Structure formats: C-alpha cells, structure tokens
Amino acid sequence: MSPFSEEEVLNLFKNINSNSSPGLDDVSPKLLKQVKLSIINIITHLINSSLLSGTFPSCFKKTVVSPIFKKGDTSNTVNYRPISLTSSIGKILEYAMKERITSFIAKFNIISNKQHGFRQKQSTTTATKEIYENILLSLERKLGIRGIFCDLSSAFDCVDHDILLQKLDWAGIRSTTLKWFKSYLSNRTQVVRIPTWCSNIKQ
Image (cartoon, rainbow, N blue to C red):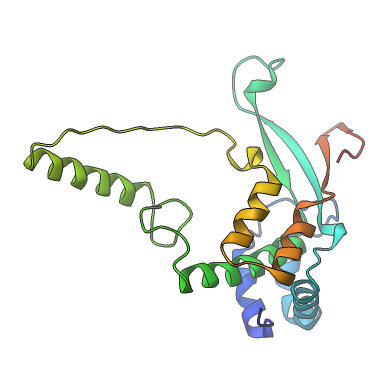
C-alpha cells in the first residue's frame, strides 16, 4: 500500500464534520480542522505508520455511545437511537484506509456492478431505476416477474468479523492490510454516556 502525501491527508480533513461531538479523547473536530496545517506532518506520519505496520492504535478504538431519544415511551429502550462518538483523528485514519481500499476495489472490479449501496455514484435511486427497467423489459417479453425485498436492520453490527476477514482475504486484501483490519476490529471498547452519568468501559 502506497504511503500518503501531506496533500492527500489534507483532503481527508474534508470528510470531518466540524459540528460533530468529540470522542473520549475530547479532541474537537472543529479545532482539529482549524490547526490542520500545523499538525499535518504529524497526522501524515501517524497514518503512514499505522498502514505500513498493520496496526490501528488502541487509543482510537474507544467509543462513546450516547442514546438519543426519538419518541414514545421514555422507559422503552427501543425508542432511543444510539449515537457512536469516536476520535476525530481516528476517523481521519479510517478515511485514509477507505480511500486506498476503494481504489483497490475499483481497479480490480471486485464489487458487482449490480450493487448500488456503498458505491460511488450509486444510490437507492439508481437501484430503483434498474428494477423499473428490468420490470418493463420482462413485461415486453411476457416473462414472469418475481422480486425479493429485505430490510436489514443494523446490518454492519451483525457481521461476523472472522467471515469478514475471510472475505477480505478472498478479495485479495492480504498481508499488512489484512493485519490492519484485524487490528481495527479487535479489542474495541465503549462506554455509554448520558448528560449525568457515564458507564464503565466495556469490550
């Protein structure tokens, strides 16, 4: 995996939302963006060291989960939406890996062209358009039409990490890069925080 230049890292800062809340490290995203030119060499070194060593720093694996009330009965946990807050610096590192992996996937056509989710220039609109066109074509040819539509809730949270790593290996993501993902997924911790209380750290 090729190392990042300072110019590339500066572009990664555009992904950070200045108005989002900080993680456990209390580093404000807004402040981080304001001082980016002063620390760009440090952040670039951090990113390259992490990617080349295959290690995701443990200090960025800590998540603050804040339950946000939606509506209904306040005593029912279903009526709360959990918001996960992580380190802003850790997010930049995640965006760096995402950029390299996205380029790799596009170069070798690993993801099917039939997939519309989580792909550039693809969306629910393009998926609906393709379904609509297929239905029209089937009607013209007097063919039967069948469809299966599934709504997956919290899909990423249910992914088996071992299977995910096997899939990455199958896709050609190996060696240090695969080691990085193993590090990223392992030994993560979280705390639940509300304005008046904070839980103990849980793995």
